[in-house]
Length: 175
Image (cartoon, rainbow, N blue to C red):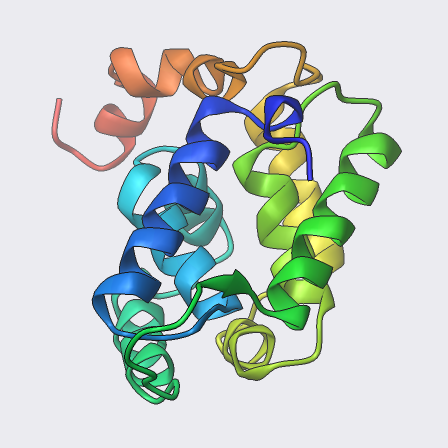
C-alpha cells in the first residue's frame, strides 16, 4: 500500500489505528481501529457529514468502542492489517479513482468502511449511513473540489468553519 497516495489526515488516521491496535494488544489492525483513528484526527469532514445525515456521532463512537474492545488480544507477535481493513483501504482507493481524485481522503475511507462486510460497516448502516446519501453529502462538503493535495480536507467548507451564517442566525432568532 502506498501511503504517499493518502492525504495527511488519512495517514494520521492509519497511524492512530496502528497505535490503538498495539495499545490494546490486538494482533491485527481492523476496521474499528481505522474508524476510531479517523474520529481521533478528523474534526471537520466526518462531523459535517454525520450532522448533515442526522447521524448521532456520540452513539456511533460508543458502539464502536464496544466493537474495538471485543477484538481478540494477543501478547507479543507482529502487528499486521486485517483482511477486512485491507479491503476497506482498497475500496477507498477505488472510490478515489471514481471521484477523479489524486489522494485517498477521509471521506473515501469512510465509504470504503461502509462497503465491507463486518461489524463496523453494520454499525454505520444501522446508524443510518447510506452510501448514496453519503456521496451526496460529500459533494455538498466539497463544492465540486477534487482531492489534489495531501491537505485537501483542510480546505473543505472553509466558509462554514470560519464564518458565521447570519441568515441562519436571523431565522433562529439569535441575531
